Image 1 (cartoon, rainbow, N blue to C red):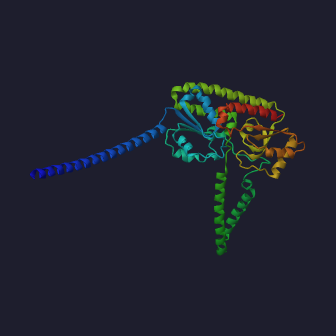
Image 2 (cartoon, helix red, strand yellow; image 1 turned 30 degrees about the vertical axis):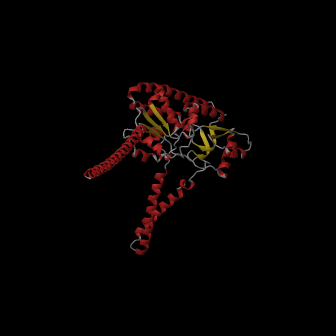
Image 3 (cartoon, one colour; image 1 turned 180 degrees about the vertical axis):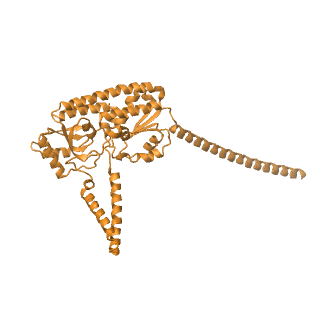
Length: 403
């Protein structure tokens, strides 16, 4: 009996021990599973961090961002065979017009950390200030094309017969006359102040409103000044701008400064030769005027060679439909000047040019196109598009148009 009791006790002990062992094993497995899970999470986080770091890691190259094709191409010419040392970005490579372009989040990120940023600096680039203010690279070099050309920058011009987006803003003669009259009345009212106190209070209120109106108008005049952004269409400006870009690249990469200097010298000679070719073409031309049935971004070019011009709209205009008066004026000019060609810019539907042609006496003018280089795409670049090439083609077209 004692033996049976002892056997039962031993069996019970073994059973308890087995249960305890089972529980311990389970806890150990749970602990191991949790530890493994945490380890995997840490590995995943580490991997993600490494991926992010790799994505934003400086590859040792010089990052250059430009907003328009001409400055993009100038950078390429300056760096030459050192191109592998650069990450060069053209923000408008999808062919979007500068005046319509708005930066994406990715664009802003590229600008923020770049070494050199080149932009036009006109009304179309009002977004740039905030982007540069929040840039991570505080040593970034920035080239503002309008500022770089200095006094050569021109205010946007509304020429005779041109349809203006803000016709009412450009005629202030009568308003100025009225202001002078109101100022005289204001002085006269102060002389009468003791005679008619109540009347003067009313007049003072009007004068106060008049002063506010004057200040508002002065502010309007101040903000109204808008510069023609198309500075790149002057070969003379191009030479100045290329030199500035080259100087900044040399400062960024001093070890290869001599190479950049040599590349710049060669390119400036090419620009200078083309500039002279334009002057010779204009000097020998039968006519000294161009007429555009379109927007007119070529003011810098025509001014360089003392050409006159007429056009439907200013260069930055968003208008697409010309008024009857504009069409009539331009058609009459074609007849008066005996013009044989009507110009448009690239990607024009030529609708306005054809309407002008149909309104002329002879209705036989040829419609030809000058390229303002505002719609160059990545595909165009890959196909060999260049600033010098486009401006050379423009010269051939201009020669034809001045016959």
